[in-house]
Image (cartoon, rainbow, N blue to C red; front, side, top):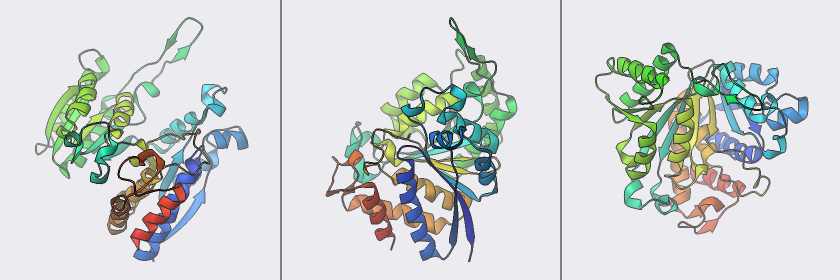
Length: 354
C-alpha cells in the first residue's frame, strides 16, 4: 500500500475548519482507493507568531521540504496588524514560497452548472467557463529590491529576469498543450520596461510550442475581457502582481471565492491551498465553505501523487453534492435545498464519495 506524507498547515481564521474537512475527504478516498496518508501539522501565520514570535518557524520549512505534499488553509487577520511587516502572518507565506522555490501558482477556474445563478454575470456569459491562471509566484514587485518607506516616500521595485520569465512560461505552455492549446500572456508592455522583457521572452518560448496559439493582452484590457467574454480564455499567463489581482477577479465568475483551489509548484515541494483568505469575521461560526480546500486536496492527489481516479471521485462527489441542492451560506441563495455547515458539507461530500 502506498503511503503519502502530507504536511498540514491550518493557519489562522477559518483555516483549521476548512483543512479539517479536506482531511476528512482525503481519509475517505484513501480507504476506497487503498492508499494511506500520514499527516504532520506545522505552524505558520498569526498562530505561529503567537506561539513562537515567528510567522514561519524553521521547523515548518524543514517539515514541508520532507513531505510529499503540503495542504495549507489560510493565514492572517487584523489581530496582527500592529506588527511590523516582517512579522505579520502574510510574510510567513511569502518566505515559505521563497524557501520552497515554488514559482508557479496554478489557479483553475471552472463554473459549476449548478451554480450558474451564483455569479453576478449572466448565465450565458459564464456557462462552460473553464480556464486556468498561471501566476509567477516568487518574483516581481513583491520581492524586488530596493524597497522601503519613510515619512515622505515609499517605493517598491518590479524586477524579472529572463530566466524567471522563461521557466514560468514553459509551465504555462505545457499546461496549454494538454488543454485547448490557447495561451494568453498578460502584461503592461505599453508602459513598463519589465513587461517589455516579459513579452519578448514569452514570445521566444512560444516558438518551441507551435501547437499553442499565443496572444498578448494588456492587464487592464484582460481584466475587462474576463468579465465581458471569459470563455475566450484557456490558459492565462502573467506575473506576480497582475496574477494576484486577475485570479481573484476570475474567481467571482464562479459566484464565490470559496470554490476555487490552487497549486503552487515548480520547486522543492508542492503546496496546495484555497485562493481565499482567512475570513476572521466568520471564524468559528461553522459557515465557511470548504469546497476550495477539498478541491485543493484533489489537485494534490492528481498532480503530485498521480492518484487521478481518487481526484476524479472527489470532483464528482462535489458536483453531486451541489446537484442535490446542498449549499454553504456563501452560495445558499442559489438552488439550495438545504443550507449546510462547514462540517456538514464535508460529511456530504464523503457520503457521495461512497
